Image (cartoon, rainbow, N blue to C red; front, side, top):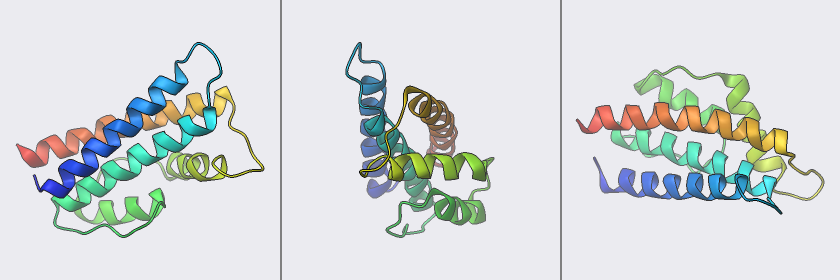
Length: 128
């Protein structure tokens, strides 16, 4: 596996760790941060998969765009509505004007964990 892909994976895993830690705090959770870091995890894993297929990912945070690139080289099951929802959660709540709730963060975690597992499986298959 290319070194760049390994770096993306390590950063993605760090993002998910932060999201999980923040989500499971006993009090004073920052649900905006949960949504942001889940989005970042999925984005970085998608980029890692692209790299393992010899594609340099563009500098974008758009999960739907990355999914379209991924579908060309490594078709996988993804839901555009979920990707758009995660994209919105990762961006909209990061700026003033909107606040993520526990429900938003819970949905982001559910989607993110499922996509993370699928993307890690794809990466493991590429390295085997």
